[in-house]
Length: 481
Image (cartoon, rainbow, N blue to C red; front, side, top):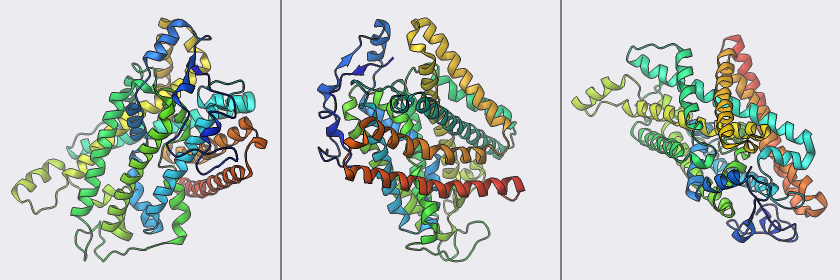
């Protein structure tokens, strides 16, 4: 069980956390201001001594939290950013920054919910926020939606990793069955979770995942600058004509916003990151800094890709780059450096594969923590905890693998699940819980209007994404995709 800090009741520490875009009549706070460290005094009277000592020892640094956020947020979705700008025009780059602000706002609301526990203290876990606000109905609704959403995310990662590995081996005329590669990918993802009790203990995994994301970012930017389409040169596929750029494409605004809004870290993992910090009072600053870095990377990648390929931009953008057998192109490049090289494209694919293999464990730890909390594993003796923890995490990986193997068109089905669960987890749940826990009478009119607008925005763009996902599934079943 996590320690629950004795935060002051309403009117002191919590009131100073009012969101920048959701002002309360009583107080507001600057972007980097949060609860003071003195307010995070702990009370372990309801904890077993061994659990308390272990929990304190396992707290991570702010840098660890920063790297976790980068690893979880910067992922495969970054390769679709240029395509998003293609859908909306150059104005789409501003959508990326806007989406970062929305992500920060949702995270702040979630953190504020955690310190609105009746009677004082900290609510542990996203699902427990639902319990404190709406009882068992809130607890089970959030738990089910969250676990289903995470299963989908990890399942997609398993499939993506196995497909990438299969393609790379195929370049060397080595063919391995997809099932074997899926089992191997799931095993690699599961291994780190057996040794990491919480997200605070996944520093090495996060560093590797973040490093590979940086490499992919550099490769995408460099390759787009080296091999853009200009005057029919460096054509994409059979296309040899000129490319065009648009300042704004209104018809694509809705889909672009729907896609980019979910390119950042979801709110469900926020409590675990904040709870794993030695100085949780710095969470807003750390999260805001991480989102700023991510948004900057996203804007550069999206703008560079759209500049290079315009209306011929593909998703993922690596499809626009020269491709062939890596070894062959390395030899040709040594002999004739003028020939376009493909090995950076292969490098990007390798790094994306490594990234998903190391980002997957972070989501698996999150899901396992939710299950372990519900089973009351932290109340058991240390050795029993370890046995239960290994059973839960291995079992979770096996269940995800079985689902990914059994369901046809798994990626489209999970996209549908995500389109249904993300609006609830990212917009509806935190906003509804915040108003319920704080009391709508204690919220200013401006705050309520801001929350209502945020909820309406989230539901609207999610609706566009849901419609597009349904169309994709229909195409898949018709065999036309």
